[in-house]
Length: 535
Image (tube, rainbow, N blue to C red; front, top):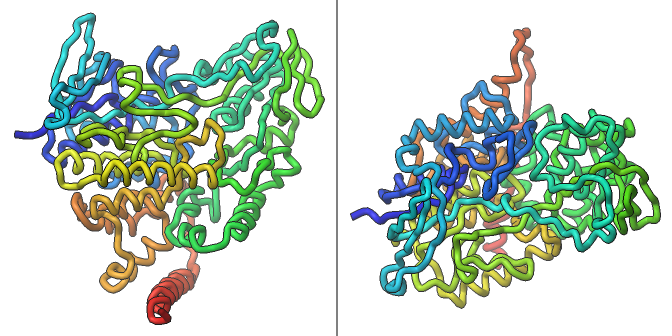
């Protein structure tokens, strides 16, 4: 008899969790509190309690080839960076292709998830739900928490003396939907993440003046990288990940500084990060520098105090006649349907093994999917999490002892602080490729470079020097997809398809890049074996 799995939420994490359950022969039931799929990526005019909220203009910061599910490439005519409505269209195509909607109970709220009395032996959970005022209790063999972490806004008002006497309007960025209604206003945006930059840029086209207040600054990148390719197709490669791992931190820092300042000098634009040693997530915004350049946005230091109509900053400067304050200050992870002891988020640390499994359970039958903030696309990340979780539920993969898991959590926490800092916004931050490989290794889906080089040199070069996208994790192991090789070799075609909308005479360019990459890969292999021969 198939094990029954409760999937909480029908956003991106919930949809891929459903598919992974079906792939492993499990019997999933998804509970979605709203009337449709999409989660965070389904725009609504009004903010709904208990649901993530986005503004109308949101566009993905990661490209389609780096964001698609591993055995389901996005249509080649889709743009490389998608408006939220286009991404939702992809989710609908995906759900229809794999017949996932039949597993979802819409307009059903999960009220509680509790261990059964015999949990130590059965690992089962009692899930209480509500639909149209009717409560129902069901027993499940496992639970996948896919409700996201962009629901409960974090607004540290205690850090803003004088907020009580401020006469203007203030709200969290979660409430923002569009720039209409802010014409002629003087607006202060507090925060320096992607939402803060997007909102500041959009408002600056309508407002009289926009200010961004930041404590530490931030690197800012364009979506467009070398030769016009999407930034993440160039940035996230196994070769570059290897360099970051083996080179001294000071060299990596220098390389990063050079790369980030290639577009514009962050020091000149008052955006330079206060601590450049940290590998914090960069802003991805194509317009922010130009709006600073034309004076529509001014970057300010941390707010020291607010008066009835003005903001006083730490550097002593004052901006008068502030009408609106937008707090783009992030979110606090919240799971009101879980007991506090199940998923602990305290002291800026998430006590989950590999950001997924509570270490203290007698049975590993509850997993959090998507409670993470990788330095790359979230979609391949949650897919590998779901693939691993479902195999753990089936008993095909095992977790280490509680002691070992706690040691891993503590060590990972120390490394996270060292790499990303102690800010509240960084508690879920993690490296990208190394974390994907960790998960893939657990299920036997991590590509083996040497074996690949001997069998298929052309593919090996693409895997090592090309973009590290989700297709790579379908080349070997359980869930192997016969279309993975072709998807990797034809990704350039899908990138260029929506761009080449005008017929041009073909140009004949001879390139030696492929030969250089082959030689570079051989050098890496030789160096690898030389290391062992030396010892």
